[in-house]
Length: 544
Image 1: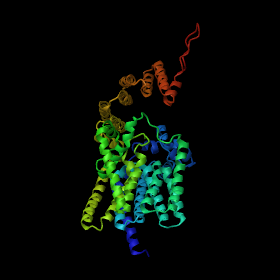
Image 2 (image 1 turned 90 degrees about the vertical axis):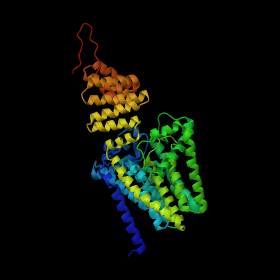
Image 3 (image 1 turned 180 degrees about the vertical axis):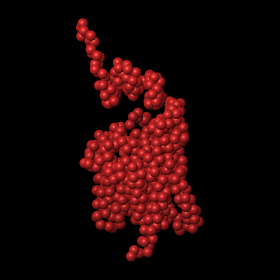
Image 4 (image 1 turned 60 degrees about the vertical axis):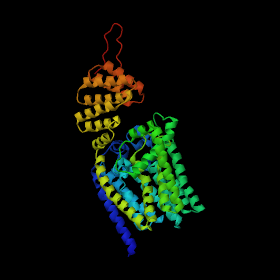
């Protein structure tokens, strides 16, 4: 029989996992949302497990969108999606369930790791509960495309747990397992490259020996270095390719502003967004106002970390260090294709949870402070599940997602364009037109207005109003002469009207603007050049 304490511990973990599954269970009814269409639903690569090594050698297997395939290389994540597809087909609930089970595994691993770091069972349980129900985690696993974050975090926690066991005196098998899980985490998502830093921070705070540092370098840092080189070999670049670069001053300020915003979300996770682009751009436009506050946040963070270390509250200090180190890859120190997202808080939140559990244990000997802390922790653990249940419907389908974001970001033209696309897919043409008209009012550049006018043209063309659609396409082309999509759509409209020469001209212009645009090439090939009549003969008409 199990010892009574261990049996109680297993029972509590089981009940905790059941509570997590119940809180998040509404997400299982959701559909494919946003990038799920590219990564899963329309991605032919995940529909078969034949030759699984292709996920590791061919970056085009990542998604059905060539643009996304240039951004990342996450072969193990893609392989896991293919395994789900092989098991249950294109059933969104199956993919979401696997994400949720991965979250449960992460919660259990964090609890076990907290125990190795010196937290007593109640405080390790508090850390696990905070992480289990932290609302920012919703996007990381209620969204199918959050699989990379859910899987990499589970594997990262497994790696750190095995490494911590090795430091505590277990055999070399734990070390081998730590290296294996580290490599797997890296192949799931590149942010796992912080694992050697987390291990080094733990060794420093807990007084690790030299041989432990050497083992961390060999089994955690070396796989990370090899992964970075492999990633470069596959993708051809070290960081994500971006469009227009920021000025040097703005780029220097961006990581501090993002750190402050992530800290704000962590401290108050009850008012979150889907897209943070407008908010970040607003703060970057006024760095003289926002940067001092960001620097103050960073200074307070550093002072708190220093104070915890001086007091000897090692678990709390390590959790706080974990939080900052895990944020490093997502602070746009090297520019990313987007500024920030709440799903990127998933791994840092595990550090925040450890810090909370460590703080509770440190205050356990002070009855008054312990009572205040316990009351606050219980209040949070009651509020978090309610917030999660409120946010889960946001990720039910595209229309729900972009309706929510349109309310939160009323001046974001791109959100309203995505809402229009979702409504049009549901057959709600009037709502789609209203969303595009609102987007047009929010746009502030000619290029943005051109995109919206082009989408309005597509909407009217789908309703059979070809002449009206052509007006919108012409306006889009006039606003942005470099818009190949508007030219291509003009070609299609001309073809519908029977004007093959105009269709040929517009298709050729679209191909000139975007030489690799296959639809324009195919349309042009279907319209052979008009033959020159032979001298003295009748014009030759191509067969229709």
